[in-house]
Length: 289
Image (cartoon, rainbow, N blue to C red; front, side, top):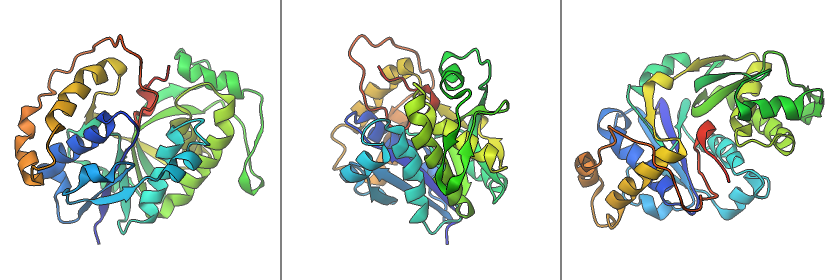
């Protein structure tokens, strides 16, 4: 049995997200993803794009997308339920999701010792919700302060003085804790209608961990990303150009040719065109117009 499964969730009409997943796999393959005790799984609405990749591929069906996004209300619910779906079908002890606009710069196996029945791993701590100077985070206080939400199993939820926003660009969890993801999704479905923010998914994971007494370790120093809109505008055309017309290239050839992509000096580019409304798995830094 493999100890660790790397999880990628890639969907939507903007193919840059599926190509970002492919880039992550190729970029990390030789060093880390190809190890004997490592598995890689992609949940995607375009499984044909990953033909020939030596990974586990799960199809994200239209029905799944509709249900998990609360009938299209908030697509980040797909990420939250998708992680649960992948792990529920996995033979691995631990799953680590990394968003498709990121890649590992340090060995992700170093995180294995931090993930157990009492501890999960996330990307970073973005700060306390109460009196936050971050406008997006402040919306949670505005939407939830003084409210009591009825959850499943007759439990209730209230914003707490120590509620924090943790970034879910990385999310590592053990098979023992799938109920934590279920609790987080219950929070998500109740909080989403009350808070006008695109970070309800990661906030729900943060609060699920706090309420259930989990320790959270962070992995920010182990990844690089192009998560902001400006950096996506720079990186996406480069990645899309590389993968255009690569259907006839073997996987091992793509691994060798990946040096053609240089993301060492990613810059911000202002987008003057209409933004895409599907921003698959960009954690806390995506924007929806």
